Image (cartoon, rainbow over all chains, first blue to last red; front, side):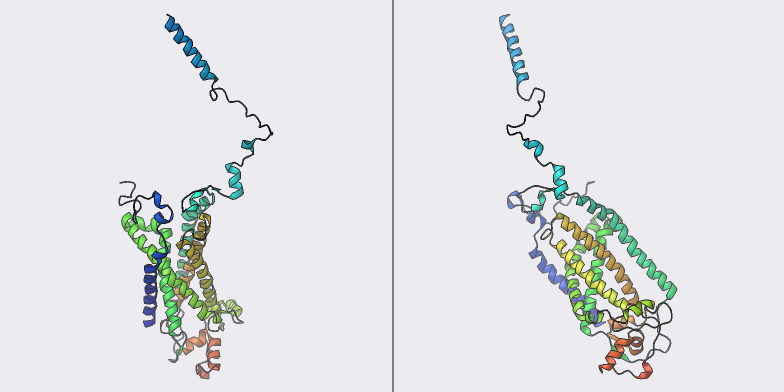
Length: 56
Length: 343
């Protein structure tokens, strides 16, 4: 059982390590797919804003 | 009266000039150039470009060069696959596997050792590093499978239950888990290949094992090495499927880095198709390694198995280990049982 738990912990640990390093190797879509001259500001992660539902 | 007459003449003159101006007259047939060629008629039109190139593409100054693709008809096939074929194929394959396993369990029950068959003598089947690798890969795979199925079925099944906001939050975390746990999964595939490839090379026991139905059909006990033919099938499916999943997954993790839009769609076909097939396969693997067969979990749980279990399911491997002096098997323990399906 110890090895089972260790295997789960190892998977989670590697996942967290990747989660901390992978974002630095990637660009957000707004940065990758547009030139700086077309950007007014950093739009953040939510490109459609908090009120995104069409019925609202 | 004179100014009125002058104005009337002026207006007639202006009207005449207006009618005679180029563009207001009925269109005249294009005159051929002095060389006799007609550049407009000879230029390629959109339909011809589409037929030749498979897409319509221009040039853009954006860093995202693929934005220059105006039309790509393959996208319609991809949409049909993603929104119609994939959910149906996925649902049918996974549900059919669950129903088949349940039916098998009802028909066959748990594959048990005979009463008094256990010797109480344990032998090592998988060492700690092998088991660590297995459980790391298994953990990653289960999270990848659940979060991957959320891509296909989430909006259809979960969103009506959870509501849009909760589903969006769950999906975002599921996406993070999918992207990050893909890496221990890839590492696990490499390690499992290195650890077990030697014992998964086809050998003389495999065809007889299949002919005997893995011991589930008839009364013959199929002999097997460290891994029987069914386990080898699982191993090679996981390794080859894992390689396809890893390669296509990396293309999706770094969108458009190496592939264009159509290439990304092909990567999606591979990732989704192989993923669904692997989930169905691993459901069978989990079944036989847990409730399906008595004693099977111990091999990956503690690493140790009863000698009689090993003799029954992997006799050739036990004999090999004995010949190498790694285990001592008294002749009285060399008995066989019936079933030896893939774990």
